[in-house]
Amino acid sequence: MSDWKTRTNLVHGGTRRSQYNEVSEAIFLTQGFVYDSAEQAEARFIETGPDEFIYARYGNPTVAMFEERIALLEGAEDAFATASGMAAVNGALMSLLKAGDHVVAARALFGSCLYILEDILARFGVEITLVDGTDLDAWRAAVRSDTKVVFFESMSNPTLEVIDVAAVSEIAHSVGATVVVDNVFSTPVFSRAIDQGADVVIYSATKHIDGQGRTLGGVILGSKEYIRKTLEPYMKHTGGSMSPFNAWVMLKGLETIDLRVRAQAETAQKLAEALHGHPKLLRTIYPGLKGHAQNALVQTQLGGKGGTVLSLDIDGGKDAAFRFLNALNVAVISNNLGDAKSICTHPATTTHQRLPEDQKVELGITPGLVRFSVGLEDADDLIADLKAALDQV
Ligand SMILES: *Cc1c(COP(=O)(O)O)cnc(C)c1O
Image (tube, rainbow, N blue to C red; front, side, top):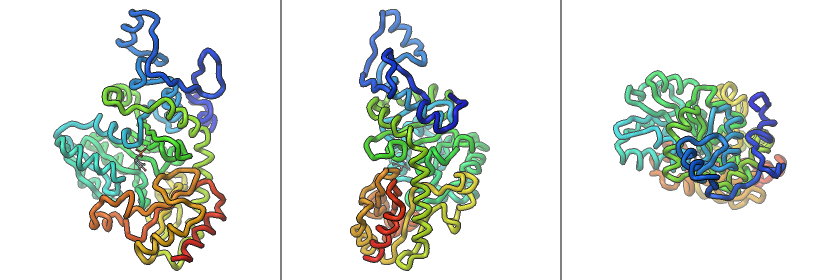
């Protein structure tokens, strides 16, 4: 299977068939597995083979198919599927850290990631240093001999700053730290974070992997040694495993992820180019635009693709942003991303509401900023919808 190209692996990778030889992957909706004998049960608890299962919190055949398929896409040795993206972030960090350790993280993080770092890990004696993720000198100045983990979103939400995975990994590895990358906005289609130096990669499968806004899920990818020796004991004893039904939805999502994400990114590029310089906009933020601050890095790190999300800073603050949102006809107002349906969000009053005003300013989350997750609709309909809504501002 590893000889196959990406699209073939996305359709066939990891497939396990039951005695019925079904074509579509089966959903093994079972918590447990029957042993042939007491001796077999004893042996399985001592050592579990690759196609042997004990309990769904530890592993399940449908979940294992999803883990194998996403590992093939990412080019990772192994993967562990989780109940949500946040269970993945929490599991990756908690499995690596103990009291007295130091973490360096990029400041522009998803609110729940910041909560894990600043509210939970800090409470257990882990010291956190936040830096501007795009400033390599800031990373160099922040890492220390006791830095155990370096953590960042390779493309930040919602201001779409792109962080240099290879350069930050080199800085982290110089002090022996493990590099954990939340790669949701870069997507597993465009990013090769492990090839570029990351040790552990995390996805919220809720986003592009499902791709149709149905289920929650997450995944942690890394070396076999890390996934099975360090992460699996933490996950299987704390209960953040993915459900077999959700794994089946995610497997079906992987079959089409390459086609969907490439189409969404192509439309996002068209939208960004059509709106760039619009008189009602202070800024059009899209990593695929030549004028984006990290566009050169987008060429080398993401194969020139700017992703499936753009952010628009509407002149006139919150009132203007709300008038724009309320005038949209094709795109819906919600907070998921990577969905087949285009989704528009006002971060300052929803996803990032909890942040104090000064932090919003520091992160560029202005009152006029809207985040637009590009779906699978026709680009011309979306451009017309966005322009008509801007006319209402
Ligand atoms: C959505 C998201 C998460 C959390 O994922 P859930 O599946 O909602 O738990 C984490 N990081 C990023 C960048 C996200 O966009």
